[in-house]
Amino acid sequence: MGDPNRTAREVVELCNLSVWNERDFEMADELVADTLIRHEVGAGHALTREHVRKGIEDFLALFDTLRWDLNLVVAGDEGEITEIWNGGEKQGLWL
Image (cartoon, rainbow, N blue to C red; front, side, top):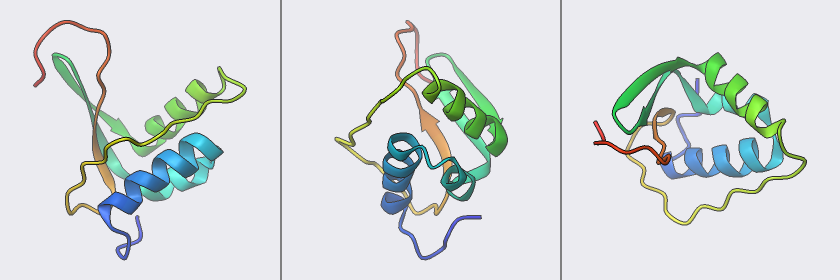
């Protein structure tokens, strides 16, 4: 479970800067909710925390280095990451 003293913005920033940029995969266990909804064009999928972590690890294993920069963070009051919206190159309507 996440730290209730962290703001939603801090959680999102930690996920991107620590988990993705520094490959601190254990931090993902702390920041991601038990179940996360991954939205994409035309669909939404429920993922477990373990699936999310494995997906991040597998993706980053494809690259020697990869860096994410946060240009915009939209965060509500939730202290764990419960939903993500991925803007792939699919055609269709967002749910």
